[in-house]
Image (cartoon, rainbow, N blue to C red; front, side):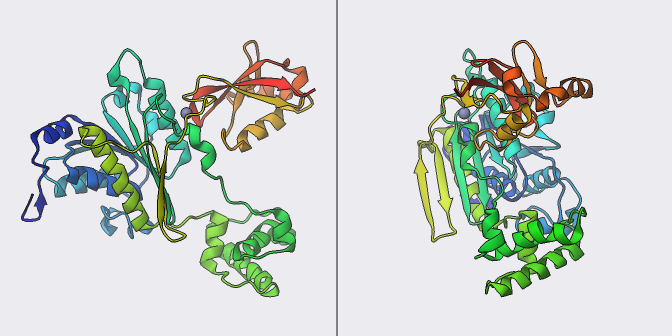
Length: 403
Ligand SMILES: [Zn+2]
């Protein structure tokens, strides 16, 4: 029903009651977050919170439509909440300008549903693990569905995570690529793409010419040099399409944010939130991929829970390693392993600290272990407990040695 441009909630009393009783946390007030907040408010949700640690930048204004030039430098969460409350009567939005890690379990306990519109893998891993950790079998209120949206250029996904019941974010970590990298031999010998020429300029030519000087991706002279060097390379191999903007994009690893992809994914997330809150229709089970970069299609499937998921699985991870592998090599392996992707892992066994990143005293005391072979530190069959800033839970890794 619409009166004078003001949209009033749905008529059905039961649905109104359900929306009235449902408190939703929105994480992220950027490209997806602006859409999500607007959609949830217009759908008739009354009680929203929003968390975002960022401030508004001029480059956000083309798609983050709750912000104006006068808002540059201000908190995204605060400005977005204010704007939507002014526009949609009856909704209260409580903003928080800061990190999700600042909040404790009591804070998260007050919500019925959490909706994520984030571009950070780390923040998603954290909230996912937090919501799984908070589940108390005795207390149904402790269980909070997580609706997660993500976009990358013309691609995106929306998913519904029912903590401990369905596959969680961590279960699917290996589906998300780390930075695109190109084989060094292609870059050096057989470039085919503009990106190969830019990588050649930045990875191979820059250190030859500039020595120890690291290029600065915010320095226009450095980008200009890389652009010109890549262009020369391109003309040798008849590769066109190398531009200054692409050079900057490749070295900064920028993926363009597309407003309409955000709108598609945010809309899907908000419909699922509405269905979960009201039981008006069955919700997504559990993963919808949207692909708009090669024609357009969507594909929905049930992503499977992983038994050895460090967050929601019951089995511990196990692996077979070479006993001569050093602790440093094991740490590198953990950082690169696509289903683990740790930043700065600390490792210990039941009886000793193998390597601790912090505090400095412990780091110093354990540093000598880094170059030792694993066989001198642990026995085959031992379990290593791994903690990392990327995860609020610890990870158990059972190591056996290859014969
Ligand atoms: Zn999981």
